[in-house]
Length: 382
Image (cartoon, rainbow, N blue to C red; front, side, top):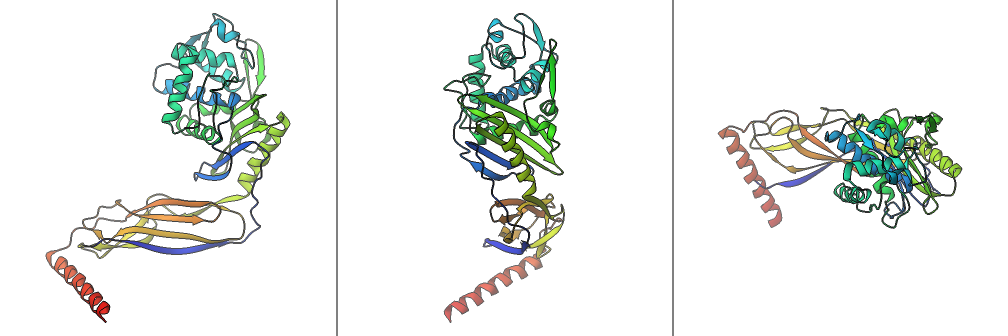
């Protein structure tokens, strides 16, 4: 049997609305993704290694969440506060040397209060020293594919080693949201009181009613003002990072405009439902000559508003498919190609079992193939 790649163009979608406007951010570095579809909506110097300031506390929290998931610690585990932790300076939880603080309270102290003292307490109690913890952060980041990240501390304090890219910050935010849904609600907490001191969450989007529920602000003189944010509206969630802004007001304004743009300039369109028959594939030496191809999962696409033309939906498979075939076998790839968005791929599977054909079926199929070859040879000869 000779296999061949077969491509079928199903249809072209055309939407006519107002033109889509690109978001021209004033941030030094930025990235926005639609988490629901995995689509990158905007990127500006997204792979540049920049000082992340307190946004790098997301990596510290990730390491803490992993320790919780692995049951090396529990939410009620108490960590001892060192003298070094209390003298770090910068944003603080106002911890006291020698006291013991639960992991639950330290999480809130890091997220809501951006406590440098809380970060060092976590680092020292997990890894022994902050330096050892920072080395573990760097190693883990590389394992996660965050190749533009390195860490000299757990806090985001200015350090030549403390660098992350916009892409890496969006990546770690996405991992936290996806892998730790039980801890993610802490990021939407608007205030936290420790030892009689109430502090408000610095995320400027939380009170605006636009679906914002995380993640972390950052600021140093070197880095400027930045934010890793996420918001959810309907079935969509976006994650973004901006940095290098000149003031808190500029950060707040840019983050709000970017969030509104991401939700209002793009729309999700459902294309196919799970188990919907989309096309057919040829079968070789089976009791049936073709097999229906169905969607393995619901298939949707993210489309920019605008005069959208030539959105191609193609099916690509290597066939004919040799019998026997089992229901659910992955047979083909459906590719959606959208201008200004790119391509997304989705699996199509067999709708039912197809058994091997009888001896007679195999003889007839072989004869048909020989006939095709003979006709092909005659045509070439002519």
